[in-house]
Image (tube, rainbow, N blue to C red; front, side, top):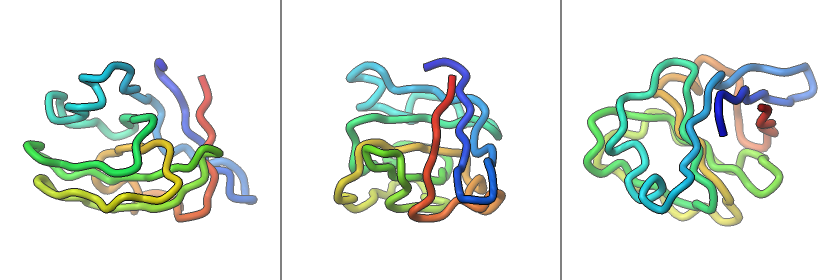
Length: 119
């Protein structure tokens, strides 16, 4: 997936959450995630499919984390997840969107919202 807009559908319109998404396509991308990558810039996101929990071991910065179900509905949100932490298993989660810390506070994204990925 290349530069993708993520829009929040909440009945009042659309809200840009991230303008560019980096997708974890390989096993090593999923295994290492953002550990080996530079810090996400504002407007960037990292999408991990087939994932229901994450960790931030060996990362050097905090992130915001959004767990989505198979319909891209938000199941859980973790804001400012610090390095060397792990989330609990999120039932029915199919993918995780990792965002720069502070992104959730800048938006109105909340549980049960729908996230729409566009090319």
